[in-house]
Image (cartoon, rainbow, N blue to C red):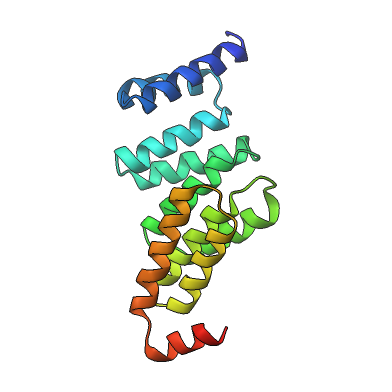
Length: 173
């Protein structure tokens, strides 16, 4: 068995392949890594992303994200990617529980992204005031100007969907 550092380097290559659009080669390399180191959490995260985003195999995506969080519990990408998947497949209650757990236990989570996702769920559930407030909170803690612009767009869209009474409540707050 080769050393872990060899497989860490292989992981970096797989990440680069995926970034360059060579998904199939990256997937093969990740599977090779996991055949030798089945507890390599970051490789599980990347495989979860491939199954979810490129192959629409949500069950395998969930499987790999859960393994990523188990084996690499301080790796924030897996927590956020898992959140995206749960929301995209409509498992909102599970996503809310996962976000709550993440915000309580993970030290280096991206509060802006998680609040944005809470806003997205609230908007899907026609809870426009809550959605507006989550987007506003996401914007407050954000540093990326494009993300901030997106939150402004989200807030405007949600405000346009509000009833007159919700808009009044918004002004009173």
